[in-house]
Amino acid sequence: MPERRFVGKKVVITGAAGVFGKWIAQAYAAEGASLYLSDIREDALSNAVDELTQKGVEVQWHVTNLVDEHSINDLVQAVEQKWKSPDIVINNAGIYPYRTLMNMTLQHWNETMDLNLAAPFLVTQQFANQMIANGVEGSFINISSGAASTAGVGMGNYSVSKVGIEMLTKTFALELSPYRIRVNAIVPGYAPGSEVSIMTQEHTEHMIQITPLGRTSGPDDAPQAILYLTSEQASFITGSILTVDGGRTAGRLK
Image (cartoon, rainbow, N blue to C red; front, side, top):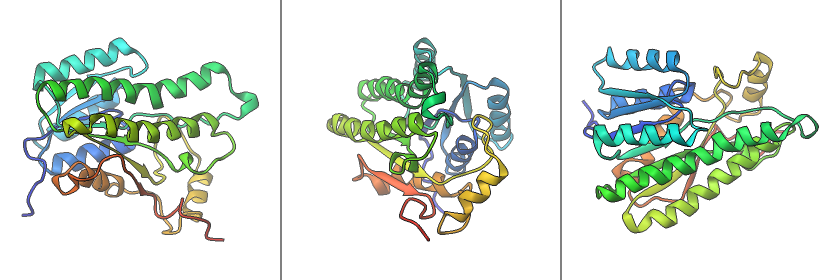
């Protein structure tokens, strides 16, 4: 059996009931990690937890409203009571709204910024304080998007939030480096099946056509990149953005 790299490691994952969240949780579980899963969808989160506990994985969970600072505080305190501090935090939660300029309200704009940008800032700040207080040389992963580098109609608010998360990744990496806490981000490829941002079959087929490797993102793609970036093998990597999108943002096929 190959060595399990994350035995004894404590991992917090936000948006854990979603497509990528479940994949990330399963990947860490397979490598021996203990998990603290967070999502606002209680039923979906409970089902995700049940799937893992039936396999003997140690899982805690918290229903978190990431646009409510008090709810984030509650999550952080719950983790502190259980573990004192996590080793790894995955800021996975986010929304992918489609709103053109003339159809976007300030509320729509703020909802995107609150969840995609402000929440990772607060989560990182508070868990970094825990890590520092407990002498943990931890690791954070943020989730960016190809929309940070390629504009699209109806994606203004989403794209801006992802440009922001990449800059926060680099800035926080610098600020936390004295404590040997690393901060990186990944750019995953398109994966259908989100319950938060529902996409049509036509959209999925279009994404496959414009992806050079000719498929959507699967359960081993982004999670394995995340495992690498939070492992000892990546101990000299911080402030990096790793793209795992089948070549979609590399350029145009035609």
